[in-house]
Amino acid sequence: GQQVMQIPQYQHVQEGEDFTTYCNSSTTLSNIQWYKQRPGGHPVFLIQLVKSGEVKKQKRLTFQFGEAKKNSSLHITATQTTDVGTYFCSGNNRLAFGKGNQVVVIP
Amino acid sequence: GAVVSQHPSRVICKSGTSVKIECRSLDFQATTMFWYRQFPKQSLMLMATSNEGSKATYEQGVEKDKFLINHASLTLSTLTVTSAHPEDSSFYICSARSSGREQYFGPGTRLTVT
Image (cartoon, rainbow over all chains, first blue to last red; front, side):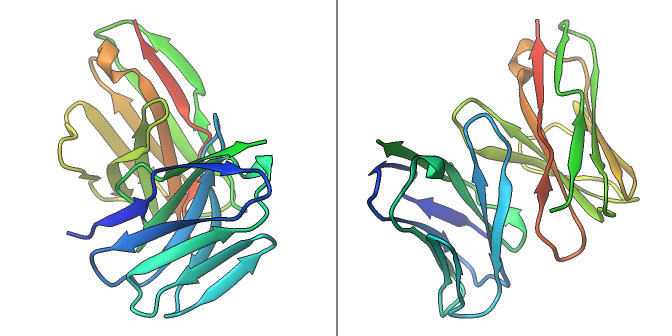
């Protein structure tokens, strides 16, 4: 069946630096969605990508869908303490099977 | 964004009893609802997918007789943990979505079985 994996699972990022998290699928996806879960909170929808090679930006966040529609990346520039949390991706409307990407920001 | 509520937010029950958790989509009709379980500092684990008016589809390893799911309307799904045991203590989160749209998550229910 479809497997969606996220790498890395944990990141410690210095405040002000950039980082990228990746989501890889074993099969071609019709869409991919990104969610963020703050510590103690519930996942919140960030964005959906549908087209091959699509790139979308939300302020300091850049989301990209691969040309083959089997992988996606989330790049955050100038990391802030508010970026702490776990980032999940969901392929074809199902959450990735994995731990997501837990991001810790070092002030 | 759309709003999904869960009730109760916290529940403590004795071992052997059953607990019902409600998930409601407040401002949209949810054709599909998902139930997840999350352990501390762990990922969300999908337990089951339910479509309104049909039987839920359970993930491998999830006991359907223990975790009863009902999705009787487009705005309500319930998860009943039957004969709860301490190992069932966890954070249960539901999500809801309309056809082809993103998921909106409820705030979660913290279940503690003593």
